[in-house]
Length: 196
Image (cartoon, rainbow, N blue to C red; front, side, top):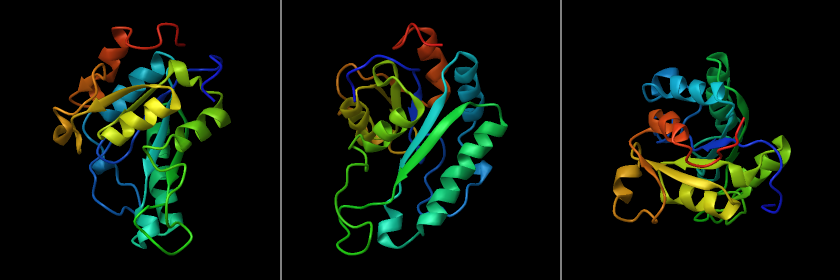
């Protein structure tokens, strides 16, 4: 999957703790959960020719705290809100599995729960995303690792769980205070100098 360098670059974004406050099981998206400035920052990326894709672990489904449909509605609600704000959202995907759950349709290990790269690979194939020229942004080391396994660059933000990873972030991974700093990083030519 990493072989070709064709297609468009994109910004893969974790949801909870990265774009919005992590409130636990979420059955519907509420705009007030978004961190301040997130929509404007993503709109700036869109203006620079960088669409976004949302990738989120939702193990609450496996645990029975959310239905599959509720998890789907919450992520689709966020995507729809961003699109109405003018952000170009290529797509979104979530993982309903959890490795600590023993029974049920979403029990056990899978290829899509981050740090596995399955969510990124699925969206890249579906939307013609060039992983080598793309970036994964999240508030957790599992996001950084998912990006590495998929072949993207990775960035960690200090919102959500980000601050608890200080001192353990792999060398070369940029650390941003929030998603709001992404346009500045792009402006410095961090990854795909030929995006657009």
